[in-house]
Amino acid sequence: MPDRTIVRAIVAGIIATAVGIFIGLEIHWFPVQASSQAHEIDDLYKVLIVATVPIFVLVVTVVLYSVWQFRMKPGQESIDGPPIHGNTRLEVAWTVLPALLRVSGRGEAAHGDARGGDQHCPDTWLHLTVPHACTLPLPT
Image (cartoon, rainbow, N blue to C red; front, side, top):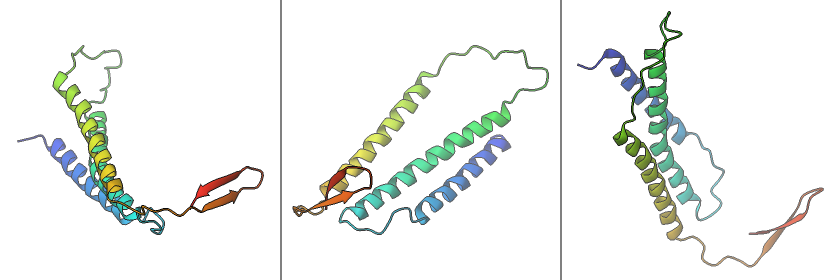
C-alpha cells in the first residue's frame, strides 16, 4: 500500500485541480462578446484552463511535498546530498509533453481561425487620438 502522505498529496492535488478548474471557468474574465470570433476565443481559453491547471497543481504539489518530506533535519547542515545521474526517460517526457501541449493548443487556435468569421471587413478606419501622443489608425 502506498505511503499515506503520498495518498494525501494525491487527494489534495485532485481537490485543488477541481477547485482551480471550477474557478477558472466560472469567473467571467472576458468582456461582452463583440466579434464573431469571440466565442472561439472563449472556447480556446476554456481548453487551456482545463489543460494547464492540472499541470500547475501537479508541479506545486510535488514541490510542496518534496519541501516537506525531504527537509533538512537538525545536524545535517554540513552534509551534501549524494551525486546522482539524471533519468533520461523523465527528461524526455518533460520535454515532449509540453511540446505536445503547445502543438495541440496551436491546432485548436488554427481550427478556431479556420472556422471563419467575417470574411468581408468594411473599409472604414477609426482614428484614435490620445492626448500628447500620435494619431493611430485602427481598423474597425
